[in-house]
Every structure is written in C-alpha cells, then in structure tokens.
Length: 139
Image 1: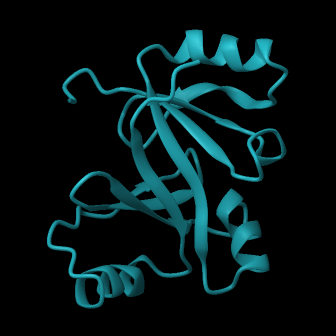
Image 2: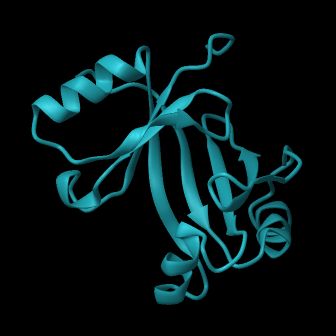
C-alpha cells in the first residue's frame, strides 16, 4: 500500500454554521464550500479549502447519525478522521483486508462523489481512517 495524498481532515461539529464562522474569522479561510446534506450517511457536510488540503466539517442529521455518538463523548466536536486518496478503491480495500485491517463496510459514495471506505481506528494507530478513490478530475 502506497500512501496517497491527504485529501481532508474530518472534523465533527455540533454546528456547521458556528464552525464556518471559526474557520473564516479565526483561521482566515477564504474558500468555504456550501454545506449539503448526505441523508444516506446521516450527516451534513461542508468543505473548507486550505492551501494543500481540506477540512470536512461534519454535523449529525439527527440522533441516528454516526457523528451523534462521537459528539456525545466530545460535545465541542473535534477531529473525527483523516482521509487519504488511492487510485483504486477496490485494490486498496483488498490490500488492507489482506493485512488483517478491519474495513468498516463496503465501498460507498462519499462527499466528494467518489467511492470511500473507513478502517477501524484500532487497526490504524488509533485514528479512524477514510480511504477515498482519487476523483478523476483531480490533481
């Protein structure tokens, strides 16, 4: 497995609006994408561009959201995951599974419109890790 580019850092938040204000007013972000709902994953998402990556703000859409549990333990929010790109999602999944890593579910379409999957943090040095197929029009 070759480490691909860091695509984004996922940050769980109880309020995307408050987080947008923080990234704009405190951190000086100038490119903040329009928030959008992903009901199939139970989240609202907003991307904040940085010079070399993005911050993915993630707000739960209700109590069934996987982010809801994270915020219950971290009420102010915080770093949720790291996302790395790979050229072929299915080859990457097979490689991680061959190494005995616990892939959480089958590949599905993520917020960038490309296939993704997550790997259990206990198998990744304590960090929930998202693997994302590089968008065809990127880089």
